[in-house]
View 1 (tube, rainbow, N blue to C red):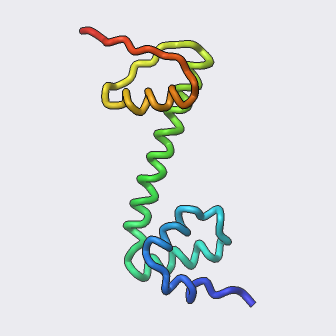
View 2: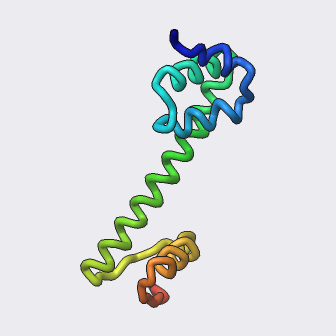
View 3: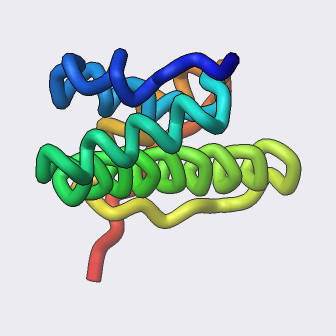
Length: 107
């Protein structure tokens, strides 16, 4: 006998279903399918997917930043950083024990 995830998840809040869909690898495929179905029935699936897309974009951005940092470490090259990202970059470089300095670009 299969477990009835739909009945269980029908009483879940939007945040609880979001957590299941955010961490799909931690759940059985049937559980994820049930969570999607319930979220869709309750009209939450679009907003959950929107939030998951933002989370994925942020993750991709961090991964790309880490790749740039790895390239700097491996190649000992220069990196031009937008002023809006100086604080983020400073934090990432410090966390990775990478020595660096900033040069103010003059035009």
